[in-house]
Image 1 (cartoon, one colour):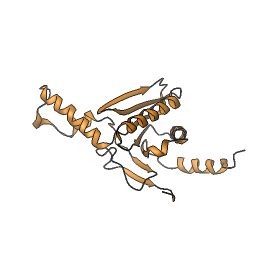
Image 2 (tube, rainbow, N blue to C red):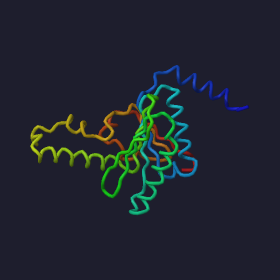
Image 3 (tube, one colour):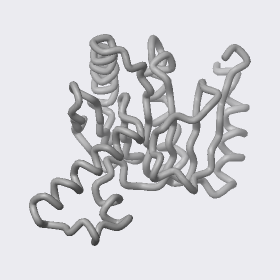
Image 4 (cartoon, rainbow, N blue to C red):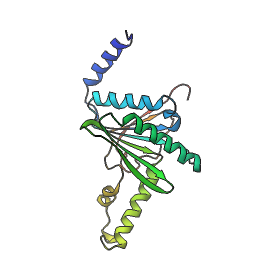
Length: 196
């Protein structure tokens, strides 16, 4: 018998008695997802599903160390793909291949919430650089005039187009640069252990 069951039941009841955010962002480091961390991420997604969260974005911050970064990014992506392949959740992976941003979708999708978007090493600076390039391409091709560019044009090209209601920074003492445009008005929770 799980001795934590009464506590978990009470915790879930207390949480469900409040208005919950429908879009949550979780910011992790590569250490958070090593070993058993990916399994914990899957448990978190399941927990969010039970609580009615509709959208979950996860940023995995990876140290910028060339080939090691790409190898780590590939290993994390493979682990996420394996874990979620048969889950029924809609999972999108965004990762860097060289300087290019690659988007992959983990199938099948059976209308199960939350939808999960995972960014592996693509922070807000990279996302905004991507947006600027897209807009400049449209200007160059004559689809858009430079003087007509506004906030809506930026938002149309974002990889993560939604504004999270709650940002949780796990395992760190400061925010990362993820969702620098989208999270301006989000609530933030910094979670640090005593060991950190």
